[in-house]
Image 1: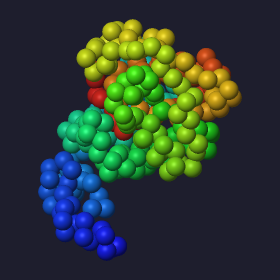
Image 2 (image 1 turned 180 degrees about the vertical axis):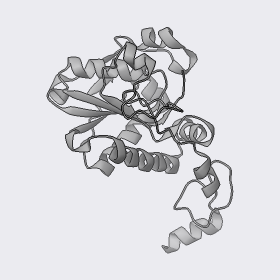
Image 3 (image 1 turned 135 degrees about the horizontal axis):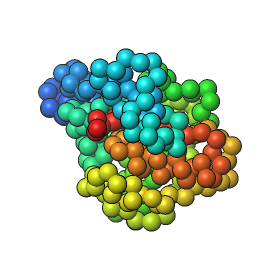
Image 4 (image 1 turned 120 degrees about the horizontal axis):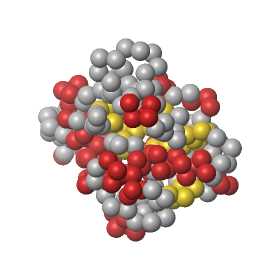
Length: 239
């Protein structure tokens, strides 16, 4: 360990960023207990949207929502279920700028990508964008940070300007069902020069109803993207 790191650990003893349990060093942001408490998202999961399907054992099973209305993206995957310590970790990164947790999320997402996605087909990584005003007010774009780290891990280019949010939308967390879909309908536009003829990996922090991922995938496909895959840090288990 470098001398400055030893001094830093003496002055600020490393601790788990969730439960504050002391850690032997600062290389990991979470203690073993919190890591173990982060619930995994399946398997089994829906072959399309990646929602956990407890009790299902078919190799290619689609949930009812995807059977009734197939999504514009090929498939969505997430390493964690958005609950318990996993939800707290995402919130700490997203709202409190916990960079070390962000790096841990990227590690989990990269592992999920290698396990579940056809990486040989994917040309570039695209983050779900914030509205420019919200980005300026926050001074931080957590999804762009995740996408950049993931792109480096997967050795793919990151295209943060390939997709933009062209109108202000209400926060999705306060909406349900159809209101979520109405909220983001037509809210995104893609740059054809950046995405035409490419297979893209769309990145977000959490997938809930899938309304945002659907709207983004539709915009990318309209601009000429061949296929769109979705990867998030966590997935809710909404019915």
